[in-house]
Each structure stands twice: as C-alpha cells, then as structure tokens.
Amino acid sequence: MNTSSLSYLLARLPIALSMFGHGLVRLPKLNEFSNSMVGQFESTWLPTALVSPFSYVLPFLEFTVGVLLILGLFTRTALVVGALLMLALIFGSSLLENWSSIATQMFYGVYFAGLLFFEDSYNHYSLDHKFSRGD
Image (cartoon, rainbow, N blue to C red):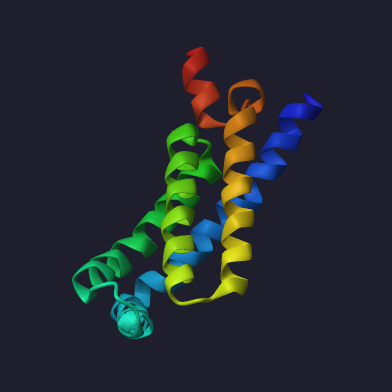
C-alpha cells in the first residue's frame, strides 16, 4: 500500500464526508433551508431572484461533490466545483459580513485546491484510477 496514495485518500475523505453531510441534511428540508437563506440575504443588495435558485441548487451540489469525492469519481471536476462553491459562499458571506464563516470557507477552498494540486500524482485509491487503468 503506497503511503502517499493512502495519505491522499485520507485527506480526500474528510472533505468528501463534510460536503456529503452538508447536502444530505439539507435535502430533506430543502424549502426550509431555502427560506432561511433567502431571509438572511434580505438585508443585502443581492436579489431574491438569485438567492432563491442558488439556495435550492446548493444542497444538490454539496451532496454530489461529496459522493463523487467519496468514490473518487470525476475527482478533478468535483474538486473544481467544490472550490467554485466556496467562492460563491465567500461572496455571500462577505455581503452578510459573516467574517467567521469566511475563514471556514477559505479553509475549504484551500483544501480543495491542495487536493487538486496532488490529484494527478496520488489519487490512486479511487474509481478514476481504476477506470483509467482498465481494471
């Protein structure tokens, strides 16, 4: 068992489970989550016409990114989508002046970028690697 590849897997799984969990708990209560998010942004200049659709899509994206990263399937795409989600959340948190959330979102963004940086070399325990080898 390659230690570097195992380390990459053990780094990939925590953020995968976090994203999976974020989406999983929000999906059954999607309307309440959306209403809450729309309510938070009422005090900003961001229009409800943008916040509402985003609030409905966000849990599906979180869930999907999480599942893909757990499986190691389309890993590169999932990492890029995860980082782009963090950029959107950082922007929203900035409008809300929720500076403590931004620190966490920045950490996630750096985490996604770090995983992406090492993905080519160490993502061996994944479906991507299995399919690329033809096993």
